[in-house]
Image (tube, rainbow, N blue to C red; front, side, top):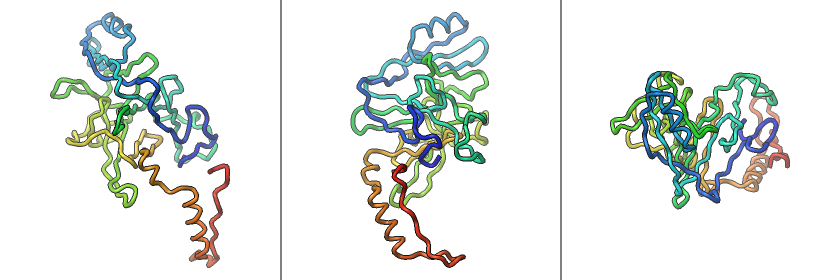
Length: 274
C-alpha cells in the first residue's frame, strides 16, 4: 500500500517494521538430520519440540532436518498468518481493488508463513533472508508436490509454492540501478527465477551470490513487496524537514501544467501522515 495501510497500523499488522536486537536470542541453525520411513518415526522426532524442516520424498520416506538454538542470531518471521510465530503480518496489495477494501475477501497469494529474516546479534549485524517460516509447531513442511532437492553436499533444500524473490539494486540510494531478481530457497541459497512463478523446476544456482539483505533490497512475497532499509541507510535518508524545503522550493519556481497552462501548487503533507 505504498507505505501505509488503508485501516492504519494495528498490532503486528503494520506498513513498517523495525528490527531490534532481542533481549534473548531466538535464532536457530541446522543440527541433526533424520531419514524417516514410518509415521511413528515422524511423531517421535517432532515430539522433541525443536524447530525442524520436513522434506517429504514419498509416502514412505521423509527427511527431517532438526534445528538447534543459535545464541548468535535473532530470527524474525513474516507472513499472512496472525499466529504467534509471525512477527510481522503482511496483507496483499490488490491490483484492481479500491482503497479500504477488505483484503480477506479475495484469495491471497502470500504464504501464511512466507519467509524469515535471521540477523546477527553482533556487528556487522548482517541480515539474511530465507524462504518459508516455522509454524506454531516449529515446523516447515515441504510436501510431496513441493519443489525440493538434495544438494551435492548432501543437504536438502526446496522452494515455497509462489517463491520469495529478492532484488538488490546497484548504487542505492544515490544512483540506483535495477539488479537481477533472484529466488531464495528455504535454506537461504540464491537461484535464478523459475520459468513461471510457481513452476515445478528451480532455476540455476546463482553461484557467489548471497541471501544477505542490503540497503534498498526489495523482497517480493507474491502479493506484497517489502523494501529493506539498514540503520546506516536511514540515517542518510532525507528528513521531513528536507522534503518540506524541496516542496517549497518547487512551488516557488511556479511550475506550469503543459496542457492547461495553469500554475501547479503542491500541498504540504497532512499532519496525520507525518
